[in-house]
Image (cartoon, rainbow, N blue to C red; front, side, top):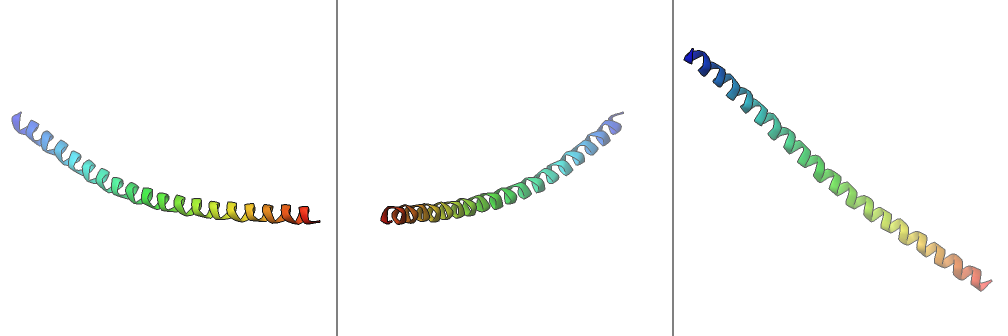
Amino acid sequence: MVENMVKQLERRIEELIDLCNHLREENQLLREQNADLISERAKLIEQTELARSRVEGMITRLKSMEQAS
């Protein structure tokens, strides 16, 4: 009886160790994906700001051309 309980406990501990290892690996992968997404977001924000600046410049030039004519 006690031996049976010990074996069950050992199995459960092994399962928990496996789960812990799996979660550790998954967590690391998620951290890497998060870092990639943060980097991509920063790049997209930079591209958006550059596009906004160019469009604003074009609008300004168009307005000055309109006023000149």
